[in-house]
Length: 193
Image 1: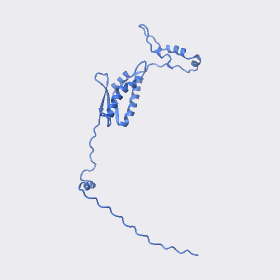
Image 2 (image 1 turned 120 degrees about the horizontal axis):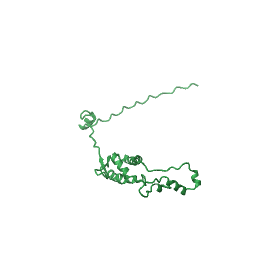
Image 3 (image 1 turned 45 degrees about the vertical axis):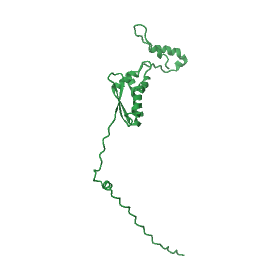
Image 4 (image 1 turned 135 degrees about the vertical axis):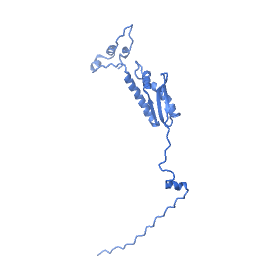
């Protein structure tokens, strides 16, 4: 239950910092009946998430995005500064990591969708996500691998089939198979009586 969660995150009055972590027990006592509380094995209060946990949540959403991009042959590479920016913008102390999906949707998925469907990543490639110079927005840059021309395995003029095609030689007519001789008739042996 979230009973008492609002008490834990409330601000202190005055200049001193008060600890409101035990206020949730009072809210649980008011919300749940004594019979139900007696059946509980433990009451586990949850604190705010740490930066390393939020980074893991961001990585989870980026991994899901990568799995969607795999069928389009697009690879997404997010540098460390961009990941930390996602942690900063996608986390709220009262809401937790819930805003993370919206931040990734707005700042990565939407611009990337245009690039993948109609732009420079329509035929695949790599999307490089970095932080801009002002450190207040993400920049997505398409890195497209240029294919080098493939060298032929057989040098021109050394393949007899290729030479015949080039010289416009008509192909030789197919040979007719040799006829199979008729088998000699076999007379049956007389059966003794």
